[in-house]
Image 1 (cartoon, helix red, strand yellow):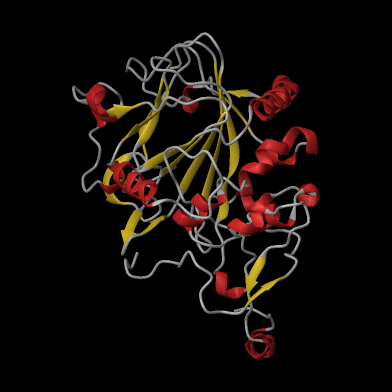
Image 2: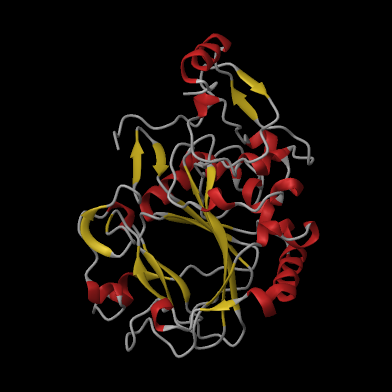
Length: 360
């Protein structure tokens, strides 16, 4: 990455217009992140920016109400029997047997929440453009942020395995720590502007108390210059306990972290079931996942124009990409349109004549 050229969080000097986004949309985000937030805001605060740059993650408190979380959990319950899949096979396990990250039970995964009927999918769709979250997405991924991975619901019963540490800027293509620069998992701060190539957002559907296990992170590791030692990643390194951090969260909180920050999970020890739904967002012209190529026909019919904008495939904002602004998200009424930077009609006509398409 050229450290001097990252997308501006503002709207720039281009013409801006409100246009209806085309049916299949997907847009990338540059999330503004912060540790504790109790009211909607248009941008990350100075302290939040400092803390994210320092630690590589933040917790946004109380994004969803107890009633919204209960409705989401009821929807999961309704689909669990047929759609919740256990990672029981050895090839699907996320922790090395015999290490502190391993446990007897498997993790369970579920997808497809965005495509459930409206009353069941509300919280999962709201994650795309929630007015409390849009300022973070834009601050970290830029205007035109897009959803990169399909949302994944993770469920764990008592004594279920964790996930060895992974991610980080020095890692292999699969995120496993390795002495290789990984261009897909990077973080930068240039002239006070934060940027990450891939942003994770995890909505908590249960409480996570000290000692419960679950999500853990190595604070500050988004700036690593050396790979994580294998023993440390497996939880057996002598320094593991000192440097690993488990954020305490309540149901309805959202944890945001750069995928450049080394993270994982320790075994779940609480008696109650653990549930989180994990999203990944990216800058508008970047793509890691390829699920956007396989969105079921007609699946987006119930989404709002702003939500559909976040599902656009990767391409630059200058090519009339639909953009979710903080003000539009705050005023969302189900019909609020995304805005776009307009491209010259003369240039579009020239491209039609030379390339056969309105955009190069």
